Amino acid sequence: DAGVTQSPTHLIKTRGQQVTLRCSPISGHKSVSWYQQVLGQGPQFIFQYYEKEERGRGNFPDRFSARQFPNYSSELNVNALLLGDSALYLCASSGGAGGYTFGSGTRLTVV
Amino acid sequence: DQQVKQNSPSLSVQEGRISILNCDYTNSMFDYFLWYKKYPAEGPTFLISISSIKDKNEDGRFTVFLNKSAKHLSLHIVPSQPGDSAVYFCAASLSFGNEKLTFGTGTRLTIIP
Image (cartoon, rainbow over all chains, first blue to last red; front, top):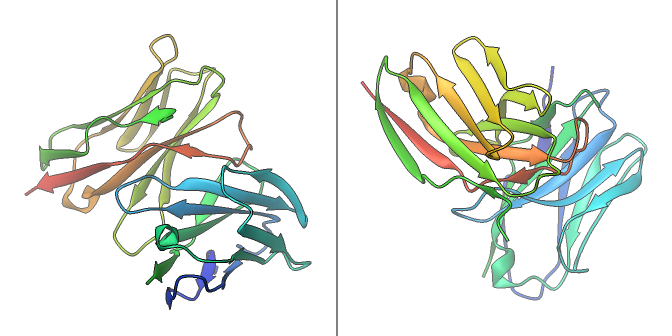
């Protein structure tokens, strides 16, 4: 069974640019969550989507947005990139039984 | 405001011995706790969880203990193996199935052969 897949694995962007990160959940999982992990810190919750509806939002600016598609895949968009947005972005999917499976992440570097 | 704290950034343990990783939390509304293990260049992997109605949960070599009055939980790994070397994160949520997890900053565990 394929796990949670994220693309791309690595990305370099310039300050002020926009970026889109993608996530495909485990087959049958309807919930997707996004986390940001800055070096030396634990992952921080950004968004949760369930059945295409936003179910939760963390303490992130409006430059961060996300959506979920009918096939339950998801995109995370970040506008007007800042150096501080450099991080590992993790996607997790859940089938609702309390188990959250993470992807390997997208490493974003903003220069 | 760090609601979940792992005060030991690193821990070294001899192979075969017990590893004990600790985690403290401040939000008394947290109801469900999880431990994740993370290798470099991989996402966190779920290890074990515990609901606040229990004080212990065991799965093979891994046991999690919860002390609600002290707002403290710990992960015991017995016996420790070289493959256990990784960063361990404690996480908490307001309820089982609530997918907003609040993570600690992690503890790097090194198992010495």
